[in-house]
Image (cartoon, rainbow, N blue to C red; front, side, top):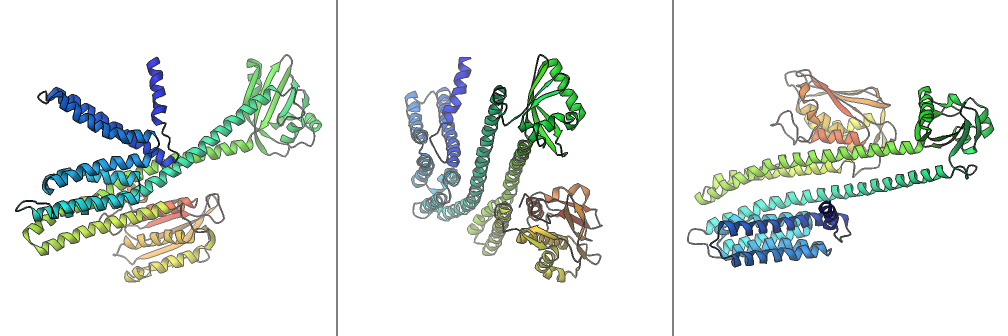
Length: 572
């Protein structure tokens, strides 16, 4: 038991870093784990060296590894004192200096196997310290590598190879820097939002606990404070004859006076007769009911939620009733927000996995053709060098387009234009104009309903929704028949008008009608675009409080239905 208690006390001490900034605090915990992990690895290495290589003097093994532990202990000690940035700079500097010394001490080819230390230092700089440190470290590492390749002796036949290794390192690490820069911004924004929401939830929990404590104390004092109580108080006999109610109780049920309440038939105030029966049964067998939640009706028929706290003493019932209607609504709203936060976290996990997977494709292409570039340089084949360079440039362009689309998707709901009431006909006309060149190129006929309902929201984002849907219809047209696109409205869903974009294109099989709205999912992998369009459309519509779905069959075209608010909503 003592060991378990010590372990439980160890974790809070481990996490007790004197860092005020919440984002840097979380980063500091991560850095602390990294340092501890390196120390553990060093200790394991010491044990293995002593067991496996006894020919090496133990004094040498312990002395050499003791130096490494001391070096790592310095940033760990600074971190425990609250100096996060200084600690991070020292760790990054250690990795950088180790690799820099290797490059300067050896030739570039021998040192290239350990270039990962430069890469690791760059990643830590981008994640822990931000854009400026990331850029500075990249330039320093590139300078060291180029110095090693150009200035230091490489041997009779290694000069060109050294330059190729240097250029490969700079290009690959440059791409990693771009990705880490974008990822670091997204990570810090998400972490800041999550910490803010966590603080709000903690505050709400504290407020709820405080309210419950005040309620319990009020029940203990109700006999003395009856006339001044903020809770409704009721005294009756076991037959149900009301002896006393205070004005608060009468007001809760919208009676003018307590006398009017006593004269009324109170059995009709229960919304469900089974609730009254269950309450009486509990009093009969348990002698008291504490915080029994019940749905009741006021004199005017309005539904309210109350908490019963009643005690049976002899032949009398002493009870309090508290109206918690507004509190219930607040709790339901809080539960909705918690569920939404959980959904957002799950979405963020899926998003991170998908992004890491899809961004690997251009990186693999680039890495593969970097090897070909080295061969082209060695062989002097200028024509093939140009082709391979072009393929690398195409992979870079694809990655840039992916990052731009992801940035646009991340901005939905965070960067908004002032919402306004807009005629849908006007939105449709502007979206059609954006796609007019392709519409004319393919000879597509557009049918647009007139006098469609107005919608309330962000004008540029709504135009973006229609533009993406129309462009998607053009992209997947069945050119064996005359292409037609229809825009219109069809009924309402929960008070919101339903709009549609219909085409007579190739259609979508049932098994793909859900996945097309997910990130990077395309029906045809060879088609243009990144697969972000419909995910962006879905996100914009959901931010506006609507929903989107598709009805389609192969060879019979597709109809995308979506709802948008016609008036101001809670989401806007």
